[in-house]
Structures are given as structure tokens and as C-alpha cells.
Image 1 (tube, rainbow, N blue to C red):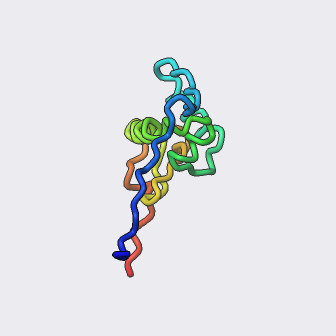
Image 2 (image 1 turned 120 degrees about the horizontal axis):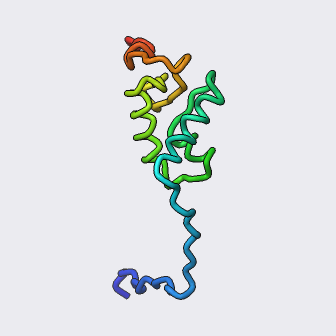
Length: 110
């Protein structure tokens, strides 16, 4: 024997037995934004990551869209970013426009 290992061909999954999870139907335009804003306003003293919000709505595939919505809400003064990493968001107090930088704590110096 030469000491070489024998390699076996990788088995490919049978496409007829694979089952994809059903996708949720698409939301009407603007509804996800309304859901995010309503949730932030319902919990004004809590901050959420985009993943937290996606899990609350049972829409993990919408995490990227929720991140964009949160940034848009910040630009409109309806939400503030409370943490840089991970990015966490909270409803703006009284819905008033507030500069984005004022919501972030000062950077820590080491």
C-alpha cells in the first residue's frame, strides 16, 4: 500500500427531497417602516438592533431592509442611534429632530 488515502466522490443531495421553507408574502409598500416605527415608539426606553427587530416581526430575511429603515428614521429625526457597535436604535424622545451625533456616547479612550 502506498499510504495514500482513498477519496470518495461527494454525494450530492437529491433535489427532489429538498424542501425549502415557505417565504412570507411581501408586505405592502411602507408597512415594514410603519411596523418598525410603531415598535420603537411602543418601547421608548429600550434600544434594538436590526436583528432584534427582524426577530420581533418574524422576518429574519428583512434584516437589511430594517437597517436601512432605521437609518432613514434617524435622518428624519424619528429615531436615534444609541450604540455604534452593534448598531442599536431607539425612538427619538418626543419624535423631535435630534442630531445623530448627540445620541451616541463619547468614544472610549484606552
